[in-house]
Length: 152
Ligand SMILES: CC(C)(COP(=O)(O)OP(=O)(O)OC[C@H]1O[C@@H](n2cnc3c(N)ncnc32)[C@H](O)[C@@H]1OP(=O)(O)O)[C@@H](O)C(=O)NCCC(=O)NCCS
Image (cartoon, rainbow, N blue to C red; front, side, top):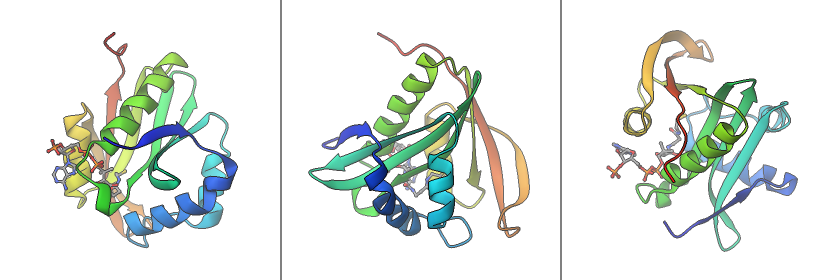
């Protein structure tokens, strides 16, 4: 993976919005307003992956007590299958673990085969189906994982 990871800065918001628009169909992608709202949630944490000054991926999570939630994980299409998503997820999970999170949940569209394979590879298990989760149109799998300390 040739990208560098760093915490999000407020001036990144437009780039994150644009990337999210490219990564998801309109029923799932966040509006600018939603993106800003999620970034400002109490317990929100966002890491970006960049090459030079280009943001090529990001992960946005939120924490409430010992529960973590992955709000979104986005990698630009041209940079996929090069471990960028894996690196962002590992870093976000480590930060959540250090902050006391022991269980992480997420939702992913039931027709998103790449994402389902990605989450399963990283230890996430399907808990159930949320009917019409995205804009009352698309179903989602609810997935979760129990966090363990990262190997030293
Ligand atoms: C899902 C996503 C984040 C994966 O990011 P990535 O950087 O390409 O992932 P990685 O290179 O770290 O992939 C790790 C593993 O995930 C699985 N995977 C990723 N993309 C896959 C695909 N298109 N088909 C099958 N398996 C896939 C594979 O097991 C892969 O390991 P491998 O390349 O050794 O086979 C990326 O495809 C993406 O941004 N998609 C659009 C947004 C999205 O769906 N986000 C997640 C839903 S919440």
